[in-house]
Image (cartoon, rainbow, N blue to C red; front, side, top):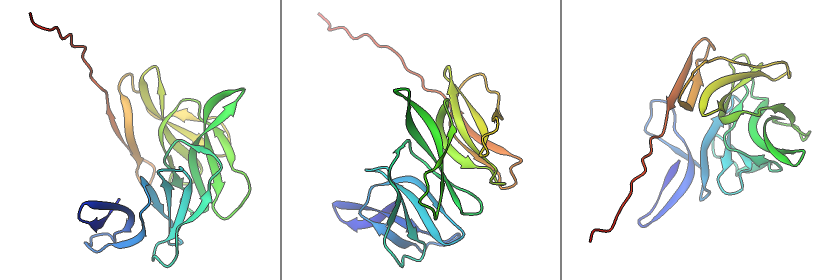
Length: 199
């Protein structure tokens, strides 16, 4: 998200743009932002800082400064806000038996209690709460193939909701009613080229 800057000196900022409008409001400037930012019903925007990977929030009406609320984990990037606005789901690295493994950290928005951790061993990218708020969905990768996994937040067994046999998942989105899933898939092609100096 970019805010206008002086010629030759581009600046970055977090902008609020109302639907169907060309008007924008600058919420915060001069911080390197990740693309992930979500708006809650209580008119606060949650976003992730590019440099320190901490989670911040700022009032949607630009009435206050960005406030760091989570800054103690090794974040993998991205976040999701529960439908009721009370919980954040954030993918993190956690050391288990001296090995780094992926987890989904569930933070209560207005609580200082440690997050609950969900196992996400095959985590590949993105995380999104399901519309009912009872599960989180994320992309997994296994043997070079991507699928979408839905994990209940109560810790019960999760399941894959796709069964692709090839390609990787670059992004996905659940419909508001949870009945449909849009998936962006693809793969990278690469070639080995031998260059020889001509004589």
